[in-house]
Image: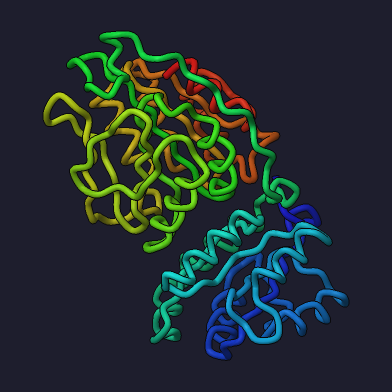
Amino acid sequence: MTGAGGSTGGPTRVLIVDDSAVVRQVLAARLRGCAGIEVIGAVPDPIFAMEHMNRSWPDVVVLDIEMPRMDGLTFLHRIMSVRPTPVVICSTLTRRGAETTMEALAAGAAAVIAKPATGLKKFMEDDSGDIVTAVRAAAASNAGRLRPAARVPAYAAPPPAAGTGIGPAGPGPDTERVVAIGTSTGGTQALEVVLPALPAGGPGVVLVQHMPPRFTAAFAERLDVMCRVRVREARDGDPVLPGQVLVAPGGRHMELRRPDARYRVRVFDGPPVNRHTPSVDVLFRSVAKVAGSNAVGVIMTGMGDDGARGLLEMRRAGAYTVAQDEASCVVHGMPREAVRLGAVDRESPLGSIAEVIHHHG
């Protein structure tokens, strides 16, 4: 699946919308130096952007959130209502910026770039690889799938029978079930479909969503309000509990451990794996070793191949493995690679993934 640039066979045409002259200058210079990317404009606010887009519509928009005359969130809603287009949000590393970014992702933004309130030029020059990756991921996305997806019904779980290992009293040594989910581009919208449909008493879930530091806490809080399961950002040593989802913090890896009678997570610093921190492969490989056949693995929309090899290890260890199908993905890269490796028991449309988890979890 490709965006408009890929569909024409030409370069990906990018419009930068940011009220900071420094950001516009650094972003434009970095992107112009990349093969297959053409910067068609860099403007200070959405009003100028609309004038530019009336003349030449871009394949990808890099959009600041807080701007004069019209805020980025309002402009994003306008873009998605007129002509759905991949948008990369350029957001400040603040609490307010994180919360607004969650609204933007829910409204259809494809990816997010984090920027500090000070030291912008040096930061964006040092972290320009993330910027290029985000633009390429957005360009590869299926713009029609970026709109918020419809909710699916929640699945009512029967009360756990004694000794099943999914009740609040805690598991026996070989019976506790755990669900591991990995996703990237398009995953924030997809998870807002899957997680609210999970029953409150289901197995514990450990989750990696590729996202910059500081944004995952706001993301978990947003999901927690929407879901019957509890959702929160993971801390090192947290137990994996029934009816709870632990989200790996942005910028840190997360593994599953079993130091005692209950699964726990290890949250730790480390170099990127498959260009990502947190990495889905790091999580999935640990689940394969620790949980084996007591696990369900789910790989969802995202660019690249992070998680594919880890899911294969899970399947070889006896876990039931699921990939989101191509038709419902914003970007099919991660699920496609998992299928190619033979890591997947079942491909499932987005609206059925919660039911599959409920049935096999």
